[in-house]
Length: 180
Image (cartoon, rainbow, N blue to C red):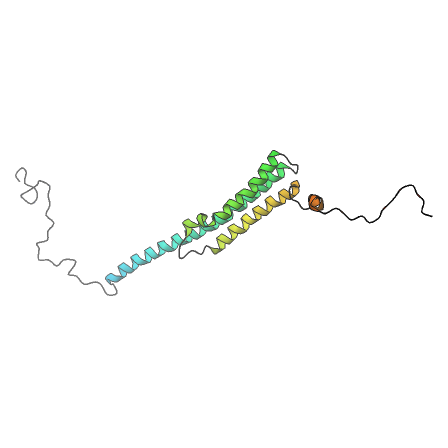
């Protein structure tokens, strides 16, 4: 073998010619075994892609339920913070109460944006959205209850005295003259 002459005798040193010049039958000439069709390979690939899509839609549904249940944790935390704030009106309790009112309101305004990543034809988002809305309405009710506990809601008659008309006089009394 001369220097510079490779396996094939010419060209590059390590070049190998893969062209098939033999008269032996190639693998393309051999018929498929009984029961095997080339279409079944394509079907297997489509089944795998269908399984991947099903797994992705299952994952999206699971994550949607997790997002829907997230306000429950916030509800417990906010309830504990309200209990710790007490029932007297001061800056901390008012701040906690308005935070408890604002968070559910802002969450209810963005329900569509929260569940946007989970939109899919195979994923039903009605249940998670309803749970999300119900838990946020529960948080809103907790905030309104705290406002009532603090006495900031006008729920008693004494809260509306200024808007009531003066009471009619039922009896009249005069002084000092006997009426006999």
